[in-house]
Image (tube, rainbow, N blue to C red; front, side, top):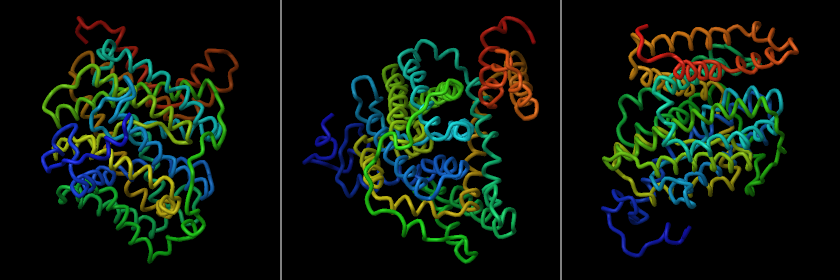
Length: 449
């Protein structure tokens, strides 16, 4: 990889942003690259911030993990843009921390700590590596119905997190007080306003703008403290395996199952960039390369104490809207993330965001994830076979996991069947997604339902 050629070219013009290998002047390229970062910044950092707060990490650890999330996503994006062999799509795809893993990361984090989370993410990425080489042959088994059920489950299973944060965060002394609810709802309304009425960069940065103005609103209520910024170091060098590494098979299975889903999401984003930005279908090599970049980017992330990465759909929307497909433009944005990762004061600013402000943003993010799942499911004929699969996946998968006392009963039995049921129903995504996948394989397609 010739990084000098990536960031430097003598002859540049204003038309090259619309070419894959175009390298426009810095004054043109940098704002376009930062537009991508603004669109994904909050979504990239929110999962690790939520995880660290839920499992009770101190502020110093929260800041460090935020820095590592920026570092990992920047590197993963560069790999996607400028492939290492077959690893990477060579398309303007932006990588960031995946919300899909948040639910299982919280479960594993409570049981085994961060060492267990990163160990499961590291080994589980092997599943996606295999998918990267085989996806062109097995893609037909992952229908929009199957993917949609899982994506819908991701949104549903995380909605309560947003509500808890609007109320102040579980365990907060001020939980459910009117100030928290007011700040959270105002943040949500501001973000909605930019999303509905904004255009261009204002619209694509609605999440970040919602956080910014929500932060300002929270100051008069005494929710903001600068202690984290003052205590943060000025400079930090990324440290691999800072929290150690542990391998637990139940955690690895959970992460491996979610990697299957993020691989499908990456296929969709890869196809979306090719179609929206270049008016063509993505090639098999591009699809395989994008999944492999996703997998190896997640491996790198686990080594450097970050959650798995995946392609960010909002950035696909920016490419489709602007038609700016220059890899150089996106690389500048990725480079800015990597640079920011070395300065903890920057990450500390994000840590100071009050829970109600973050919750106001998360409510919409998780709702959008659920709606995306509905849109995928809507591509199926729900009047027949697909409707039966959906009903069973929801009835069994969502139904059983919504009764924690029943799942707890499975854990008390020592036999293998009980251990399997405990693992299977530990997470809604696993229960509903695997059942839907199995039913799609075994139910005859030539019969009326």
